[in-house]
Amino acid sequence: VNAAAGWLSLPVAQDTVADLTVNAGSLRICAPSEVGLRVHQAGVLSSITDVGLVRNGDTWESPGYSMANHHADVTVTVNVGSVDVNPLGGCL
Image (cartoon, rainbow, N blue to C red):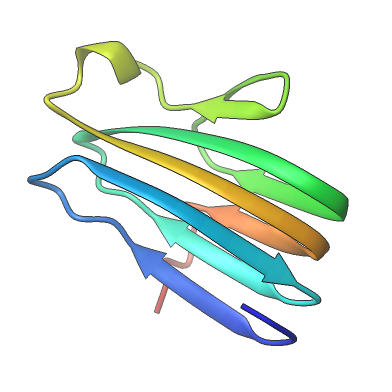
């Protein structure tokens, strides 16, 4: 996402690996509650907002990540931008 806003809805019935970049923009990531979600964040002048994830350094993880049947491992590099994970208003 470059100088824009985007969204990503992760699938419920498969494992997912994603490498995303945000430059001067914003990104919303939505994951079903059944999916174990891990988000790694890097970049400068960036923020990440999450609902229900536990932070450990530059990584956010859903409770019960290791016990989930399917996992989503997402790496986001954010430069002058923001990422919202499971925002209250949804992704659309």
